[in-house]
Amino acid sequence: MRKFGMAFTVLTTALLAVPAAFAQAAGDQAAGAAGGKGLAAIAVAFGMGIAAFGCGLGQGRVASAACEGMARNPGAAGAIRAAMILGLVFIETLVLFTLAMIALKIV
Amino acid sequence: MEHTVSGLTHFVNLYLGHAANWVLASMGLHPENASQPIPEHVAMGLFVLIVATLLALVLRLRLSVEKPGALQQIAEGLLTNSMEFGIRDLLEENVGRQAARHVAFVGSIALFILLGNLFGAFPFLTAPTGVVTVPLACAALTFIYFNVEGVRHHGPLGYLKTFAGSPHDLGGWILAILLFPVEIISTCARVLSLTVRLWANMFASDLIYVIFLGLLSGGAAYGYSKSPVLGVILGIFPALIPILFVLLHIFVSVVQAYVFTVLPAVYLGLATSDEH
Image 1 (cartoon, one colour):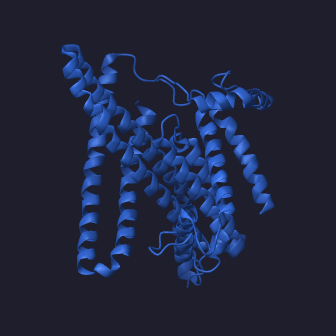
Image 2 (image 1 turned 120 degrees about the vertical axis):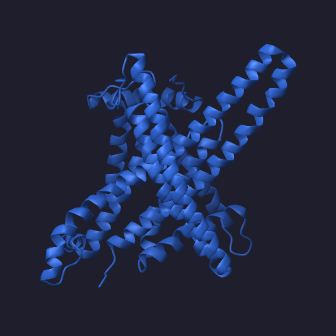
Image 3 (image 1 turned 60 degrees about the horizontal axis):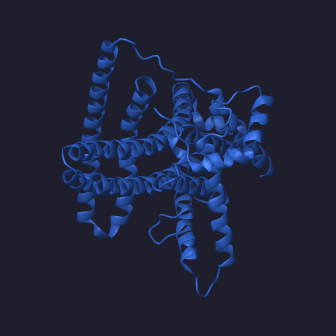
């Protein structure tokens, strides 16, 4: 455990320096022309829309199955609720990947 | 985007700025802003650490078997719970034996993330987990930890064999050629998914609050330019509706901390399991 403690300290100290090193990593390479910005905005809207659409369908199925399960078996409601939250989080992660890519590449 | 830092970061940089500059210079790195070398998320992360340590020390002074106070009950509830939500419960469910050994690590990360996320709901404080390097650090540490535990349990070659599906016979070994790269890639992808899930939730939570505040304030400012009374009446909306988003942020914070506890527990269970 002591070695792990030392490794952790070294890692934390190194992490203090990382933000400074990555100063302009995902810099401003956005197209200068207004056309480029406009197209990028449309692409963002479509991307997020499609992601949200898929997420909505998937999470709707999760929630409906959870409600049905809890209605049939109220005693297992706690376990079903835990599984439902976990499922929702996993599906939401995919939409957030889309958002992260947009934030990194376009915004 | 404008970049204003909180008073806490100014305070930390006032006292530790020179030391931080010296450390960075000795490594050959240059901070973005030489007068503020310690970025906000680092200062907030240190503050989370201080707050958590103070809470733990206060808890220690007030521990009692006969009459547990509120703080003790909260701490016990975080650890083990009648609804199976506690850290030790999740570990026992997913890891099985030796769950108690992992409580320290998984619990530390879970509490850091819980407190760090909740900081975003307070004025003058920002969530350290809203900057991508902090969730990356937590995910990388978790990755290192469950791999080390897997190697400790199976031995290095045995651990690699579990990636190949623990083959016994020729059919198993042939399948292993297909299975091994897929398993390696999916295990390495866990770092990315843990990081992005936590970071994007915190980032989006913040962003939605700011966007709605901007939209509603724009409406109120327009109303004010027409007539002061209308402006004040419209000003009720940007005053009250963002409260809903703060509540959403608190809910998302707790859920994300729970997920960042369950997932390392599941990964630890997978890494240290003896199947077939």
